Image (cartoon, rainbow, N blue to C red; front, side, top):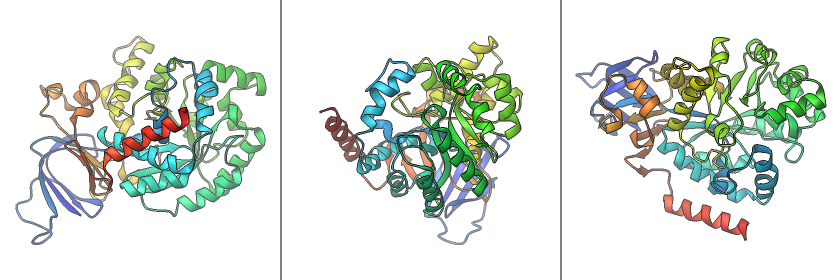
Length: 425
């Protein structure tokens, strides 16, 4: 599919807005620049030419931490603290899941990602075969990360998955990981460290999400989760932690030294009253920070616009400083840092040769006017209503409220409701 976008405003690789055209040939960006007066690709080169009408093309958002198939528990177990929410409501329901259900529930999440301008996700959940199949069938880009703990999967299965899914499809990657320190035995964590060293691979996990988690880890191991995992050699080749709300100075120093990513999840942390991550301090130390929605059972939506606003808004409250974590920083966190965290360096910005994962933002909406600063409009007043088009890997999967994923959305909605009714019976 060859697509020409013209009469466009484009957020370029330097995050500056330029006027001109963007050409997609196959699944990559072939040209960004001024309007071309002659067709450089020959006659009938374009399958489609799109007049952008001076709307804005941006790189797709990267949801750097989520659990897609948890769509079936959206609004099911709300208004509970994290550990009660997990142990009394979520884990018992998840125990009923079967692989086929994860396929359909992941598709529901993909629809929502597309409406929010999210072109790839970092998905930690059970039954990776079903997640990968749902993503490929929809044309969506997914990075899988192992959710291994003492109750599911094993280091051996993780290694098998690592080999399998890193050769599965161009839309799929796989990373080593585990659910959390508090659900994973030391023997298993040592096996994770061994795999990281064997493959020289990064490792990702939930980390220091609540005060109780950190306190209980210190009681068990004498140190914080970050320090404990570092001592075990889990992060010798990088990786990162999801949430990272309660971090000591030593924890932050480890993240900086190991070049680990923090993936902040302000919507989930706010709703579960877990706390506010010290994002400004992390940035000041040079720690890379990406943004994730967490799962649709704890957030409860997969909306990068809301996450961006919460990242900056909560940082300002925490620091009592209205200049903390500015809009430009937040947008880069949601786009470029998210891509690098996921190992998707080939779609971290809009530039010639990069993969064509992009979003058209409708500026002809009241919340985008006046145009004093388009980046600040995106972060502070932008919403899903501004997502006019979402392209992944050179294919338009969502445009003007309609999906092109090979299945009627109503069938996906019906299946999701059928699944939750079955489990609640």
